[in-house]
Image (cartoon, rainbow, N blue to C red):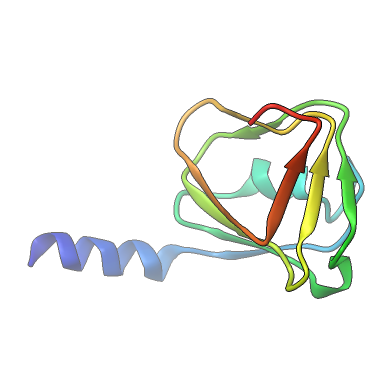
Length: 101
């Protein structure tokens, strides 16, 4: 019972973080969303990015446990991939190519 209550409380504190472009820096990219994400947050890649490719200069850091939901039709991460410092990320509708995960 206590574990169920803790899970429900953590979901209440989770934020939805939008990803609105394929840039590797600036406002709205996946990198910035990941850096600002808290444990349990859901990063949502906008539907306007379906089929797009995010070309990275450096690996994307996983610092907290969160989820990344790609758009229907998916999005491609290219050139670097992800590096987990701590936590884990659950990915959906995403493809990683020419990179190490």
